[in-house]
Image (tube, rainbow, N blue to C red; front, side, top):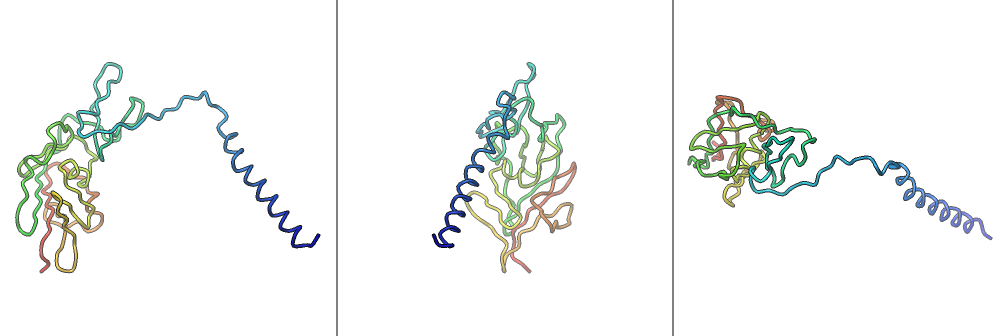
Length: 192
């Protein structure tokens, strides 16, 4: 038998052994199959009112974001905790110098964000501008904003900026978390 044949056989056997080990060893790593799994199935939603949980006979308000309830079991962390007293701030969206009415943008069954003509009430301290706008059927990623099927992106002739209290946010503006009394303006306009 030639040396190259022996090498080929040795490599084939080694490959098969590694393949078997790759499928068998992970099974041994999870030996305790009786351990409780704390992972609840995600629930689809269209509004916050579809995400309520009852924990120890107390109703728990849960946020619907990206069409998924953000908490699906009582023992899961409450990242988007509901607060009784809202954060209220002025908010406007300007496209080519025209103000977009925000009054009826949100779903009336949403609980965490309430849209008014020129202001918003947010009932959580951690919602970002991007998440708030999603509740009003507006998609914003910092470079583009999608409003009623129309996409407005920053390019060589137009700018898209988020101003907070008169100052433009330059790095990750969509991640800004508004504070009480802020004046927030999202502008899409011709560059000067």
